[in-house]
Image 1 (cartoon, rainbow, N blue to C red):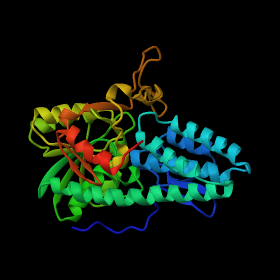
Image 2 (cartoon, rainbow, N blue to C red):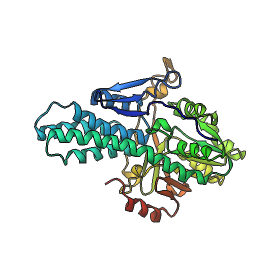
Image 3 (cartoon, one colour):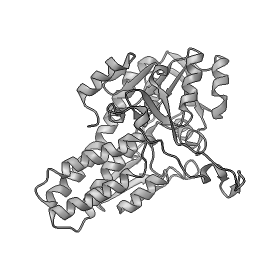
Image 4 (tube, rainbow, N blue to C red):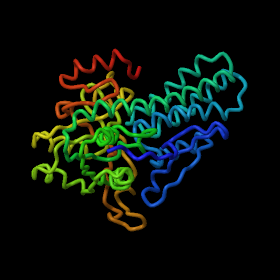
Length: 354
Protein backbone atom coordinates (compact mmCIF):
# COMPACT_ATOMS: atom_id res chain seq x y z
CA UNK A 1 0.00 0.00 0.00
CA UNK A 2 1.55 3.32 -1.01
CA UNK A 3 1.02 6.55 0.85
CA UNK A 4 -1.26 9.11 -0.81
CA UNK A 5 0.57 12.01 -2.44
CA UNK A 6 -0.49 15.41 -1.16
CA UNK A 7 0.87 18.78 -2.18
CA UNK A 8 0.37 20.56 1.11
CA UNK A 9 2.40 23.08 3.08
CA UNK A 10 5.06 21.86 5.47
CA UNK A 11 4.30 22.06 9.19
CA UNK A 12 6.73 24.97 9.42
CA UNK A 13 8.60 26.82 6.67
CA UNK A 14 10.50 30.01 5.86
CA UNK A 15 8.82 32.44 3.45
CA UNK A 16 11.68 34.19 1.66
CA UNK A 17 9.43 36.76 -0.02
CA UNK A 18 8.00 38.18 3.20
CA UNK A 19 10.88 37.13 5.51
CA UNK A 20 8.58 35.45 7.99
CA UNK A 21 7.79 31.99 9.34
CA UNK A 22 4.71 30.15 8.06
CA UNK A 23 3.29 27.34 10.19
CA UNK A 24 0.20 25.20 10.77
CA UNK A 25 -1.56 26.24 13.98
CA UNK A 26 -1.94 22.89 15.75
CA UNK A 27 -4.24 24.23 18.44
CA UNK A 28 -7.02 24.58 15.83
CA UNK A 29 -6.93 20.96 14.65
CA UNK A 30 -8.89 18.87 13.92
CA UNK A 31 -11.72 21.37 13.59
CA UNK A 32 -9.86 23.86 11.43
CA UNK A 33 -6.72 23.67 9.26
CA UNK A 34 -5.08 27.08 9.07
CA UNK A 35 -1.66 28.51 8.33
CA UNK A 36 -0.31 31.35 10.42
CA UNK A 37 2.60 33.75 10.01
CA UNK A 38 5.20 34.95 12.49
CA UNK A 39 6.79 38.26 11.60
CA UNK A 40 8.53 38.83 14.96
CA UNK A 41 10.40 36.72 17.47
CA UNK A 42 7.82 37.68 20.11
CA UNK A 43 5.09 36.21 17.88
CA UNK A 44 7.09 33.02 17.48
CA UNK A 45 7.73 32.71 21.21
CA UNK A 46 3.99 33.05 21.87
CA UNK A 47 3.20 30.45 19.21
CA UNK A 48 5.64 27.99 20.76
CA UNK A 49 4.40 28.67 24.29
CA UNK A 50 0.78 28.13 23.22
CA UNK A 51 1.74 24.87 21.43
CA UNK A 52 0.65 26.24 18.07
CA UNK A 53 4.07 24.88 17.07
CA UNK A 54 5.08 21.72 18.94
CA UNK A 55 6.92 18.43 18.55
CA UNK A 56 10.65 18.06 19.11
CA UNK A 57 11.92 18.23 15.51
CA UNK A 58 9.47 21.01 14.60
CA UNK A 59 10.72 22.98 17.59
CA UNK A 60 14.27 22.51 16.33
CA UNK A 61 13.23 24.02 13.02
CA UNK A 62 11.32 26.79 14.82
CA UNK A 63 14.38 27.62 16.92
CA UNK A 64 16.58 27.78 13.85
CA UNK A 65 14.07 29.88 11.92
CA UNK A 66 13.52 32.10 14.94
CA UNK A 67 17.18 33.12 14.89
CA UNK A 68 16.91 33.65 11.14
CA UNK A 69 13.81 35.78 11.69
CA UNK A 70 15.60 37.93 14.25
CA UNK A 71 18.51 38.33 11.87
CA UNK A 72 16.45 39.09 8.76
CA UNK A 73 14.26 41.65 10.54
CA UNK A 74 17.08 43.40 12.40
CA UNK A 75 17.77 47.04 11.52
CA UNK A 76 21.18 47.02 13.21
CA UNK A 77 24.18 47.82 11.01
CA UNK A 78 26.86 47.34 13.66
CA UNK A 79 27.90 43.68 13.86
CA UNK A 80 28.47 43.69 17.61
CA UNK A 81 25.08 45.24 18.39
CA UNK A 82 23.47 42.93 15.84
CA UNK A 83 25.00 39.90 17.58
CA UNK A 84 23.66 41.11 20.92
CA UNK A 85 20.17 41.44 19.46
CA UNK A 86 20.37 37.91 18.06
CA UNK A 87 21.53 36.61 21.43
CA UNK A 88 18.55 38.17 23.23
CA UNK A 89 16.15 36.70 20.69
CA UNK A 90 17.75 33.28 21.13
CA UNK A 91 17.43 33.49 24.92
CA UNK A 92 13.73 34.35 24.65
CA UNK A 93 13.02 31.44 22.33
CA UNK A 94 15.10 29.00 24.38
CA UNK A 95 13.10 29.83 27.52
CA UNK A 96 9.72 28.88 26.00
CA UNK A 97 10.10 25.06 26.28
CA UNK A 98 12.86 24.00 28.71
CA UNK A 99 12.52 20.21 28.35
CA UNK A 100 12.52 19.79 24.56
CA UNK A 101 16.20 19.76 23.56
CA UNK A 102 15.73 20.23 19.81
CA UNK A 103 14.60 23.83 20.31
CA UNK A 104 17.94 24.81 21.85
CA UNK A 105 19.79 22.65 19.31
CA UNK A 106 18.24 24.52 16.37
CA UNK A 107 18.89 27.90 17.97
CA UNK A 108 22.52 27.10 18.74
CA UNK A 109 23.18 25.70 15.28
CA UNK A 110 22.16 28.94 13.56
CA UNK A 111 23.88 31.08 16.19
CA UNK A 112 27.16 29.31 15.44
CA UNK A 113 26.76 30.23 11.76
CA UNK A 114 25.97 33.84 12.59
CA UNK A 115 29.10 34.03 14.74
CA UNK A 116 31.22 33.18 11.66
CA UNK A 117 30.05 36.24 9.71
CA UNK A 118 32.29 39.20 8.99
CA UNK A 119 29.37 41.58 8.37
CA UNK A 120 25.69 42.00 9.21
CA UNK A 121 24.71 41.25 5.63
CA UNK A 122 26.70 38.01 5.66
CA UNK A 123 25.23 37.07 9.06
CA UNK A 124 21.69 37.50 7.75
CA UNK A 125 22.35 35.36 4.70
CA UNK A 126 24.06 32.64 6.74
CA UNK A 127 21.22 32.56 9.30
CA UNK A 128 18.49 32.08 6.69
CA UNK A 129 20.49 29.50 4.75
CA UNK A 130 21.26 27.46 7.86
CA UNK A 131 17.66 27.57 9.11
CA UNK A 132 16.46 26.24 5.75
CA UNK A 133 19.14 23.55 5.89
CA UNK A 134 17.84 22.44 9.31
CA UNK A 135 14.33 22.08 7.84
CA UNK A 136 15.45 20.20 4.73
CA UNK A 137 17.63 17.83 6.74
CA UNK A 138 14.71 17.06 9.05
CA UNK A 139 12.70 15.61 6.18
CA UNK A 140 15.60 13.40 5.07
CA UNK A 141 16.20 12.36 8.68
CA UNK A 142 12.59 11.26 9.17
CA UNK A 143 12.60 9.26 5.94
CA UNK A 144 15.80 7.45 6.92
CA UNK A 145 14.54 6.87 10.43
CA UNK A 146 11.29 5.45 9.09
CA UNK A 147 13.13 3.04 6.81
CA UNK A 148 15.18 1.66 9.70
CA UNK A 149 12.21 1.48 12.06
CA UNK A 150 9.76 -0.30 9.80
CA UNK A 151 11.98 -3.38 9.90
CA UNK A 152 11.01 -3.77 13.57
CA UNK A 153 7.34 -4.23 12.60
CA UNK A 154 5.97 -7.69 11.81
CA UNK A 155 3.91 -8.11 8.64
CA UNK A 156 0.67 -7.71 10.63
CA UNK A 157 0.59 -5.81 13.92
CA UNK A 158 -1.33 -3.50 16.22
CA UNK A 159 0.80 -0.59 17.41
CA UNK A 160 0.20 1.68 20.39
CA UNK A 161 1.46 5.25 20.21
CA UNK A 162 1.23 8.17 22.63
CA UNK A 163 0.98 11.90 21.86
CA UNK A 164 1.90 13.06 18.35
CA UNK A 165 5.25 12.22 16.75
CA UNK A 166 4.04 12.63 13.19
CA UNK A 167 4.29 15.09 10.33
CA UNK A 168 2.90 17.83 12.56
CA UNK A 169 5.79 17.33 14.99
CA UNK A 170 8.39 17.63 12.21
CA UNK A 171 8.72 19.27 8.81
CA UNK A 172 6.81 16.30 7.40
CA UNK A 173 6.56 12.46 7.59
CA UNK A 174 7.31 12.18 11.33
CA UNK A 175 9.37 10.07 13.72
CA UNK A 176 7.18 7.46 15.47
CA UNK A 177 4.40 8.01 12.94
CA UNK A 178 7.05 8.16 10.24
CA UNK A 179 8.00 4.59 11.16
CA UNK A 180 4.33 3.61 10.95
CA UNK A 181 3.97 5.35 7.57
CA UNK A 182 7.10 3.59 6.30
CA UNK A 183 5.78 0.21 7.45
CA UNK A 184 2.47 0.81 5.64
CA UNK A 185 4.31 2.00 2.54
CA UNK A 186 6.32 -1.25 2.65
CA UNK A 187 3.06 -3.20 2.40
CA UNK A 188 2.66 -4.20 6.02
CA UNK A 189 -0.75 -4.38 7.66
CA UNK A 190 -0.57 -1.94 10.56
CA UNK A 191 -3.39 -1.02 12.92
CA UNK A 192 -2.73 1.92 15.22
CA UNK A 193 -4.08 2.45 18.74
CA UNK A 194 -3.70 6.13 19.60
CA UNK A 195 -3.89 7.34 23.20
CA UNK A 196 -5.85 10.57 23.61
CA UNK A 197 -2.88 12.17 25.47
CA UNK A 198 -4.46 14.26 28.19
CA UNK A 199 -4.76 17.06 29.02
CA UNK A 200 -4.32 18.68 25.59
CA UNK A 201 -5.33 15.65 23.51
CA UNK A 202 -2.52 15.68 20.98
CA UNK A 203 -3.28 12.03 20.29
CA UNK A 204 -6.95 12.48 19.48
CA UNK A 205 -6.63 15.88 17.81
CA UNK A 206 -3.39 15.44 15.87
CA UNK A 207 -2.32 11.80 15.58
CA UNK A 208 -5.80 10.57 14.68
CA UNK A 209 -6.22 13.46 12.23
CA UNK A 210 -2.94 12.64 10.47
CA UNK A 211 -3.44 8.88 10.25
CA UNK A 212 -7.07 9.11 9.17
CA UNK A 213 -6.09 11.45 6.33
CA UNK A 214 -3.48 8.93 5.22
CA UNK A 215 -6.02 6.12 5.25
CA UNK A 216 -4.20 4.26 8.05
CA UNK A 217 -6.38 2.22 10.41
CA UNK A 218 -6.44 4.13 13.71
CA UNK A 219 -8.52 3.70 16.87
CA UNK A 220 -8.58 6.21 19.73
CA UNK A 221 -8.48 5.08 23.38
CA UNK A 222 -8.36 6.84 26.74
CA UNK A 223 -4.80 6.98 28.10
CA UNK A 224 -5.85 4.91 31.09
CA UNK A 225 -6.99 1.90 29.04
CA UNK A 226 -3.64 1.10 27.40
CA UNK A 227 -2.46 -1.33 30.09
CA UNK A 228 -5.76 -3.21 29.96
CA UNK A 229 -5.45 -3.66 26.20
CA UNK A 230 -1.92 -4.95 26.67
CA UNK A 231 -3.17 -7.47 29.21
CA UNK A 232 -5.84 -8.62 26.74
CA UNK A 233 -3.16 -9.24 24.11
CA UNK A 234 -4.44 -6.51 21.81
CA UNK A 235 -1.15 -4.59 21.50
CA UNK A 236 1.86 -6.04 19.66
CA UNK A 237 4.30 -3.19 20.17
CA UNK A 238 4.58 0.39 21.40
CA UNK A 239 6.37 3.18 19.55
CA UNK A 240 6.67 6.79 20.75
CA UNK A 241 8.73 9.86 19.96
CA UNK A 242 11.05 11.75 22.31
CA UNK A 243 11.72 15.33 23.33
CA UNK A 244 15.12 14.62 24.86
CA UNK A 245 17.24 11.51 25.37
CA UNK A 246 19.85 11.69 28.10
CA UNK A 247 22.43 9.06 28.95
CA UNK A 248 19.93 7.35 31.29
CA UNK A 249 16.35 8.25 30.25
CA UNK A 250 13.94 9.20 27.47
CA UNK A 251 11.87 12.34 28.04
CA UNK A 252 8.55 12.34 26.22
CA UNK A 253 4.96 13.47 26.71
CA UNK A 254 3.58 12.79 30.19
CA UNK A 255 2.08 9.30 30.28
CA UNK A 256 4.88 7.65 28.30
CA UNK A 257 6.51 6.16 31.39
CA UNK A 258 3.36 4.32 32.46
CA UNK A 259 3.04 2.79 28.99
CA UNK A 260 6.66 1.64 29.17
CA UNK A 261 6.13 0.02 32.57
CA UNK A 262 2.99 -1.75 31.37
CA UNK A 263 4.68 -2.91 28.16
CA UNK A 264 7.66 -4.26 30.10
CA UNK A 265 5.36 -6.17 32.45
CA UNK A 266 3.47 -7.71 29.54
CA UNK A 267 6.67 -8.43 27.55
CA UNK A 268 5.64 -6.13 24.69
CA UNK A 269 8.42 -4.33 22.75
CA UNK A 270 8.70 -0.66 23.63
CA UNK A 271 10.42 1.44 20.97
CA UNK A 272 11.43 5.11 20.78
CA UNK A 273 11.89 6.93 17.46
CA UNK A 274 13.99 10.10 17.52
CA UNK A 275 16.65 11.87 15.47
CA UNK A 276 20.21 12.23 16.72
CA UNK A 277 19.49 15.93 17.39
CA UNK A 278 17.23 14.82 20.28
CA UNK A 279 20.10 13.18 22.15
CA UNK A 280 21.66 15.04 25.08
CA UNK A 281 24.26 12.53 26.20
CA UNK A 282 26.24 14.94 28.34
CA UNK A 283 23.40 15.03 30.87
CA UNK A 284 21.40 12.71 33.12
CA UNK A 285 17.73 12.71 34.03
CA UNK A 286 18.35 14.60 37.28
CA UNK A 287 19.85 17.55 35.40
CA UNK A 288 16.81 18.18 33.20
CA UNK A 289 14.05 20.66 34.01
CA UNK A 290 10.65 19.08 33.41
CA UNK A 291 8.22 21.68 32.14
CA UNK A 292 5.13 22.37 34.24
CA UNK A 293 2.27 23.90 32.34
CA UNK A 294 -0.59 26.15 33.35
CA UNK A 295 -3.28 25.03 35.82
CA UNK A 296 -6.01 25.96 33.34
CA UNK A 297 -5.14 23.05 31.03
CA UNK A 298 -6.50 20.70 33.69
CA UNK A 299 -8.92 22.96 35.48
CA UNK A 300 -11.04 23.91 32.44
CA UNK A 301 -12.48 22.37 29.31
CA UNK A 302 -13.12 25.44 27.21
CA UNK A 303 -15.16 27.68 29.51
CA UNK A 304 -16.35 24.85 31.71
CA UNK A 305 -14.74 24.54 35.14
CA UNK A 306 -13.57 21.00 35.95
CA UNK A 307 -11.74 21.64 39.22
CA UNK A 308 -12.76 23.79 42.22
CA UNK A 309 -10.74 27.00 42.46
CA UNK A 310 -9.21 26.06 45.81
CA UNK A 311 -7.74 22.75 44.56
CA UNK A 312 -4.07 22.66 43.57
CA UNK A 313 -3.07 21.21 40.20
CA UNK A 314 0.22 19.57 39.21
CA UNK A 315 0.55 19.57 35.43
CA UNK A 316 3.85 18.14 34.18
CA UNK A 317 4.17 18.23 30.38
CA UNK A 318 6.73 15.41 30.20
CA UNK A 319 7.98 12.38 32.09
CA UNK A 320 11.22 10.37 31.99
CA UNK A 321 11.37 6.69 31.05
CA UNK A 322 14.50 4.83 32.25
CA UNK A 323 16.45 3.25 29.42
CA UNK A 324 16.11 -0.22 30.91
CA UNK A 325 12.45 -0.12 29.81
CA UNK A 326 13.34 0.78 26.20
CA UNK A 327 13.92 -2.15 23.81
CA UNK A 328 15.30 -0.06 20.95
CA UNK A 329 15.78 3.55 19.84
CA UNK A 330 15.24 4.18 16.13
CA UNK A 331 17.39 6.96 14.65
CA UNK A 332 18.45 8.11 11.20
CA UNK A 333 21.80 6.36 11.69
CA UNK A 334 20.26 3.01 12.61
CA UNK A 335 18.47 1.15 15.39
CA UNK A 336 20.20 1.43 18.76
CA UNK A 337 19.80 -1.40 21.24
CA UNK A 338 20.93 -2.16 24.77
CA UNK A 339 23.47 -1.91 26.22
CA UNK A 340 22.98 1.76 25.45
CA UNK A 341 26.35 2.80 26.83
CA UNK A 342 27.79 0.98 23.83
CA UNK A 343 25.12 2.10 21.33
CA UNK A 344 25.48 5.74 22.32
CA UNK A 345 29.12 5.71 21.24
CA UNK A 346 27.85 5.57 17.67
CA UNK A 347 25.71 8.65 18.29
CA UNK A 348 28.71 10.54 19.70
CA UNK A 349 30.84 9.54 16.71
CA UNK A 350 28.20 10.73 14.22
CA UNK A 351 27.63 13.95 16.12
CA UNK A 352 25.02 15.20 18.59
CA UNK A 353 24.54 18.30 20.70
CA UNK A 354 27.72 20.06 21.86
